[in-house]
Image (cartoon, rainbow, N blue to C red; front, side, top):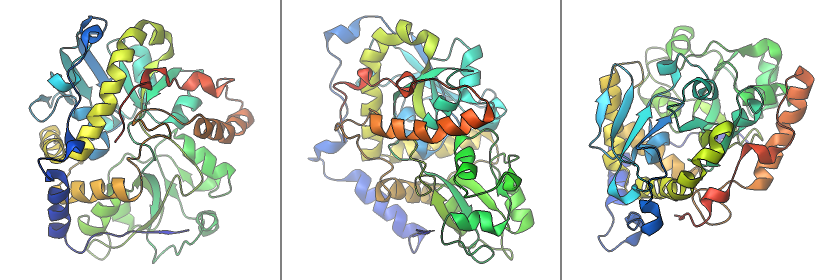
Length: 385
């Protein structure tokens, strides 16, 4: 069951593969953008400026959202946001501009649902579906479109120090599991017997500092599409050099989550519904267009992070490998209905059934019905890849 990383032999080969895949033939229709909006979409039912709060620093896992603006937006390094006119291909409902706000340390690692609860300027927020469920009473939101189909979140380890073959081996090791505070899948891992309460270390901030200083002698959360490449090729953490790591995605662990769903505050869903009917299919189209030709926006994400000047950096090689993994591991697949948009109700139900007893045991209240946590109606008629 163990995941073995399959990094390409050289960064150059990876990049060449990306270029070849992205450029394609001029006759290939898969990279075309949405048709011009039809007459109903001209109605001014949307905010003039759509504000989107993401859950992390700019990365390719957010690429379809940055596609709404494209590579010619403006970076505000002081406020960690990227904004600009919405691209003509996605312009509906009177929207003129889009503002994309960084998450993570940019919002002091505050959960996006909590940020949205106190900021009426935010229309859409990136929230993992498991966290939508977890926060469905204390800070209720509704997931209205997916970004990726499968979750690249992972738990990684040094195979030389922790020779893990099965999830139960994580608990048997007794080693610390470094993770963000308040993430739902950690509760699942404890409940499933894959780690213990005593192993939980919720002090992770996203930087590699502790891993480097300790020589990677613990388990750490991350993204399979990002940190695996960094620790194996860029970060000097073991004997002064990068070194191989192994990982389980949360899906490998049985936690079939939708990552970073586009979510709306529950108390604003009715007001935003006329806009969402027009906008949500365009959100899906933007993701399709990004995955068909990722290079312009992926390169811009590198520049944005340089401007933000934090520990979080991207590179062409890292982006290339991450994009390959999005395809290889099915993170960017269509939904069962053929759209790149909707949520599978059976998956949502399964995730809810995992989390409900965990929060019941903790005395934490969540929604009585998983149907309250997602809404597929705005995905009707959305395109697929």
